[in-house]
Image (cartoon, rainbow, N blue to C red; front, top):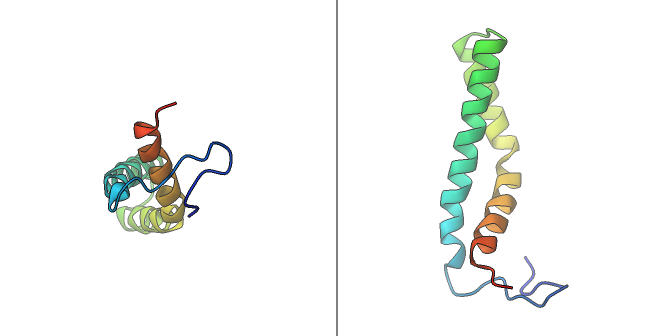
Length: 82
């Protein structure tokens, strides 16, 4: 991760442990994705609970890197002052 923004020179790492709160954002994103997957594959596609579990697990693993970057971005935007 870059130390500063290339466009506006905003310092990303404000203090040690600044992005600790992004873990909670990432957790919320993962839970939301899992709930949507559960509803989609269990109720609409009528798959067995075991298949739905494996699908949710695969989706969670595949989207983990996306969630990591998105949660950090959301967290830093909560504290960004123009």
